[in-house]
Length: 459
Image (cartoon, rainbow, N blue to C red; front, side):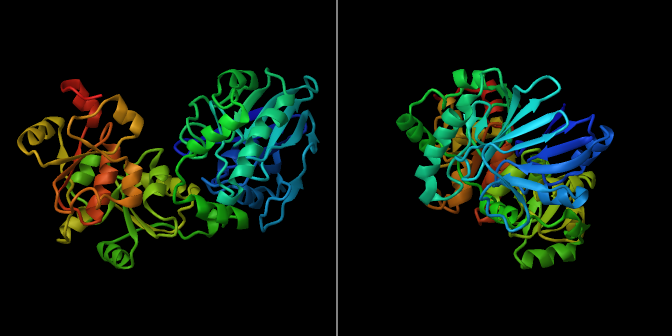
C-alpha cells in the first residue's frame, strides 16, 4: 500500500493519498485547493487517481475536490447527507471501498460537522487489520474538532455527537492504530493542536485532555474552549457547498500602476502590504494593512479582511506574488485585483505616504520613563500576558482590536505604542489602527522577546 501525507503550512491543513501501486490506483482524501502536488505524486508513482474523499465539509479552506475531479475525472465521495449542490457519491456508515491491497471502511463520526466520516484503512497485502485511521476533524493530535460550525441551534447535539464519536465509534479500534487527522498545528478548527502530524489512538487516549472526561465535564470544557470564528469561515463553507470555481477560471493577477491602485482605493479595495515590518514602517500606501509574508498570512488576513473584499497586494519581490495568491485562494480570497512590488512608483509619483514608526525597546523605555500618559498596548494572548508583561501596559489581545477596535478604551489622538512577542502582530494591529484614523501609533520592533533580554517584566 502507498501512503503519503501532504501538509499546508500556516492553515495547518493535512491531506492524504492512499494507493495500490500494483493496481496503479489511488484515492486522495481532503485535497487542498491547488491540486498539482497530487497529480505529480501519482504520476511519479505510476498511479491513476480514481477517487476523491472528503471527510467533512471544510470551513477553514476551499476544498480542492472539484478542481481535482476536473483534472482526473475521479468521482467525489462524502458522508451521507452532506448538502452539497454538485454530484457526489454518498458514503454510509460501514461502507467499504476496496481496490487492490487497499481497504477503506467508512465510520460515520458526526460532531465537528453533522455528516463527517473517518476512514479506517487496512493494507490487505499485510492482513485485514486496520492499520490507520484518517480521522478528519474529529480527533486531532492533542485535541478534538470544534463542534460549532453547524450553528448555535445544533451546538448541544453536536457536542453530544462529538463525545459519542470519540468514545463509541473510535472505541472499537485498538490502541496500536495510527491516526492521521485533517489538520495540524495552526488550524482554527481546533484549539491546542499539536505540531506532530500523526499519533496513535492509544497515545491520544492516554494524553489527549478531552478523552478522559465524562460527558458533563467534556461538554463544559468544549464549549468554553471553542476558538474564535475567523471571517472567512462562513464564505468558505458556502463555496464548498456549491463547489469552488476552477483556478483556471479565476482572473489572472497583474501588476498595477499608481493610477490603478488609486482607482482601487476609491472603490474600497483593501491594500494588503506583505512586506516586513521595517519596510512597511518606513513608507507605505496610506490605509494599507501590514501582514508580513509568512505561512500564517492567510490566517491573519482572515482576521482583518472579509473574503468578499477585493485585494491589492504589495509585495517585496515579484516571486512572492504567486505564492501569496495561492495561499490566499486556499483561504477563500479569490478577488485579488492585482499587485505592486514595493512602493517606489508611489513615491516617485509624489503620492502621499503613510509611516509606522518602529520603536526599539530602548526608545520605548525612554518614552515610558518620560511620558506618564503614553499608552502601551500589549496585543498578545492572555497566556502570554500572564507569563510576563510591562508594568504600565494595557492588555487588549489583537483579535479583540481587529473585531471591536479600541475607541472605547483609547482616545483617537492618544500616543499609542503597540507591543507583541516579536513585532509581527504589533505591526498588524498598529497598521489596522492607522487605517482607522489613529494617527500617533508606533510598533515596538523586537517586542517582548527583545525587552526581556534587557529589562524586567511584571507577572
